[in-house]
Image 1 (cartoon, each protein chain N blue to C red):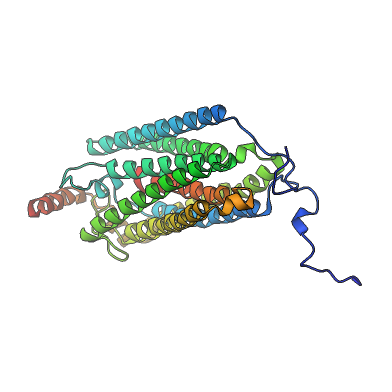
Image 2: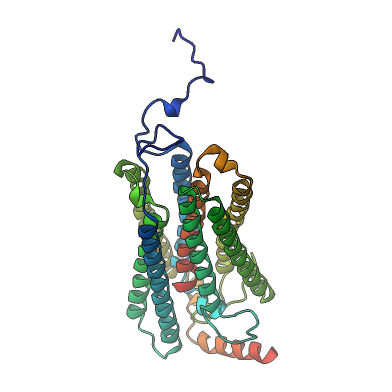
Length: 225
Length: 151
């Protein structure tokens, strides 16, 4: 090693061809998301393990049956379906923003990112309402008022897992909204036009789709089965 | 077509606006339909639980179907929305192959949880008594009525 490496002059990643035909940042975003998938997977699997080790478990249709402004009407699955559709639609607007970025269409990027942020905030609002509602019913970390499906008294496992996992997902949605707001400001200011590409939007888009992807599984594990 | 800003990226995916719109619309409709089917199955399970003798086997089948539908949704989100399906095969493999660990992860831990339940039911009569009481459902109904009366 006689020749010192001058790190400032060596562009390691642009030495030739990327074997994956991807720019560095986007590839690393993929690997981050893969590791995050394992984090969420570990959470959901630990929930599954505890549920499999229990003789009975609270019935989600009895726990999540409220809807804002609907009083005490029994509406199982209704509110969470709304939340699911909000996230799917905001994922679609994100796809449109990324596509507009491919075309270098600044106005369209700003427009679709804006709607994605609106969707994210709507989802967070729904989640805040649901948490408040459950808290008012007496559910929180360490307290669970809902009986098991077979009528026996349930442990606090149900609410502990519910609040931890939906909270962790909600935190991802929150940081996704923050990232999208930064993307909106940068696009509006013309930062990406000056750079000549909208790759940052693609990376933010990957993160946002991942948040939607995780919700699909949270929805499955907590509300459907 | 080389990427304008990154020379290491050899070619860029380019889809015409029409193709893109068609693909996004198709995927959105597909995801919505799958979600609606899932909701339908969820409500079916709900009405079955309200009935006198819900068939445990049928509930299990429905839950299995919902799991498969969820995996289908995940496939479409990752492959179309996140464009993983358009990447180079080697790149896809570096993401998908490590995720295979989930097969072991899920199987091992759920089987472990189930075994723990069986052990406790066999050797901890108090646990079994507390969580599988026979006359309990009636009590829960009373509680529910009491609660709704209070409200």
